[in-house]
Length: 307
Image (cartoon, rainbow, N blue to C red; front, side):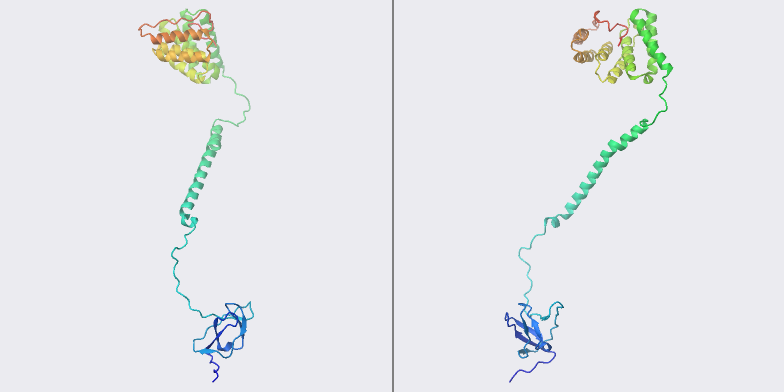
């Protein structure tokens, strides 16, 4: 007896002519051309087949194709997680550390660049602006006549002292002129100021009038002159050696004399001075050995040095 046409709430089961997979379709699709969802073969749903009473299967239509694609009722196996799941990528595993490192690197680079810019531009520009650089002067500042008078007074006193080194009044005038100039030493031109510091230290260390000597003050003036000359002037170093010696610092005096000799190794005066300072540093006597000043070197006198 032939199979009856199924009812509307039933489905029909048949085999695909192309891949022989078992397909199912609603009964209302009988004689409709459909495409196999497995192999794509298009064929009409047969009117007779193995009829099973099953709940209706909703069709899925594809607007881009002429025929409808049916669902294949195939049993699905339960999903089993793989034994060795694939590891995540390097970035996904370390993204927190990578992002943190990038933020730290960007912040550090910004801080270093800003510090460099501040040191080389902002700070330097502020210092130059505070010192008056870039400001136009309507006229050059006029020289202070008082400072010029002090310099001329020192020069005259030094010339008189070279002519009469043993005269008490001449030496007193020289010390007085140095005192007046040292009170305004910051207003005197730098080169001339160093000369005044050096000559004042020499006079206060070597004057034959014991009452006018001031070894401690002479040492401070000599150190200042040497620092301002960047220790590149042998005459200033020789004055410092003398000031160190009269203050009882024999070892430092010998070392300073050797430093002065290194700047001018062929100078006979410096050679003789270095030899005698070294001799006195090695002689533990209470009475200092007098250091002779060569007579063939007129550049220095016991009262004052001339530059």
